Image (tube, rainbow, N blue to C red):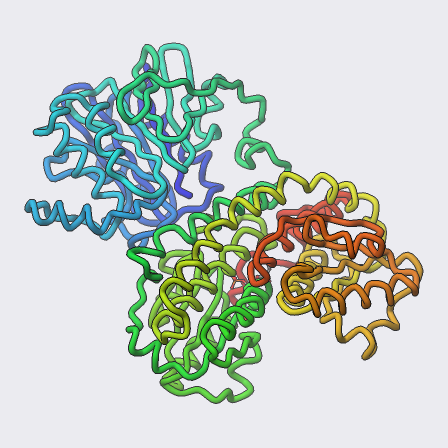
Length: 620
Ligand code: AGP
């Protein structure tokens, strides 16, 4: 989720652009860069890995007073393709150094475009997908049917790109013009007096103007000092949506929400879609920097998943799918326990290390232990170039974007999806799933962003419930099968956000002790399976609910919409869309995230920064 800002107006572009990048630092990034058009046909680009301060130091070194001009753009990069180093930082330029491009998103067909360009003699200067756009625009502008027309050249390139992108393009020949375009990635225009902006979010320009225009899917905009013009990718005029920003800067950073976590809960459909994007081509699952051959995958005779906290719960969820798809034994281990129990590992063991930050010390030490034992390690990570992927044999990146809230939400759902991709890749390599079965499972995964979006449209009921039970002294969570790790995750959310005693159980364990905890009015959340899926689990769980209701529990039931069997046993019924059994955690977790956040808000706690917790636990 990179930060982008473009400006054409009457002020020094460098100052405006750097100011915009500073206001988007909250998005998290690992490199930054700027491009400024000086009006005399020169295009200056400076970029640097690391924090904005590194870029500013670079600008001081070259003499920022020499970088004049009233048109320019900037970028803070959250690395997806290519490590976070200088040459992979944006803006990217073509060989002539007269076209500069910044990009947010994932160009899925960049490999074929890159091959085409290299076959034409283009020498790529980075490992990124974004650089291909710079060369393609330059080629279209220089010798295509769109020669000399920057907007038409950008539009022609956009028609060839697959995937998600926000592109902002400048050309040294056109010092008073910036062209931007979007597909499945945010882009807004800021409308000022004698100045205009483009940005990935309004935080970049609301100190200058609160009049904005939101571009729609497959739209392109040309901004100049005097105005802006919106078209589709064929050059036909298009309607975009004007709005006035009534948020303050702090709210703007949170997309209008009170907390980042609330925004990140809303970003889960996009996080899922971005994580899945590009991983199924020509009928096959493809992982990122796989570096583990299909033969190696076929040799695997055991899988471990090692992780902590929510990442550990994502492994517990994935265990059901991976074992079902591959018939391989899967052990899910707390990373902090893993290496001290002397696990049985060898070169035919696959260890999947799941970590949002990629810096968690317990998980990193587990990776090191696994590699010492000659096991193959595949990292599932949300942070490009972090220590855990660097020390693993292979990596599959989740693309949830930076997760600012300490309590994991969108990263957790993205981890489940990524773990499932690993399972499908194993099943595909081992032949335990036919290609059409793999395709069907992937298609069902691709339908999940829409299912999660549907859940998000109904969570007001959950917020209301959160306010009503906020003064409870404890909440229990029950589930069976894949609902059991969801119960654990729901309990963890409530513990870490509302500092409330909460515990998740396998519902079958109730009668082995925990049912003694049930007392009058105690809220108990039950995560129901579909009545159409594993019917036996559904009926057993209905029995469990009646047992606890008979003892006074206040039953809060997460159930598939239309599940009338469970309705009589639910004091509160929260309905989620019907999805395949193995995918239910992706929809049933969301109400539990919202519930915990609302209880914390009601209790007056900081939802983003819970007490005693850090976003990344880099000590054992
Ligand atoms: C989740 O809400 C917690 N913040 C925590 O359990 C987290 O999942 C755990 O620390 C693992 O972090 P990682 O994914 O960055 O390794």
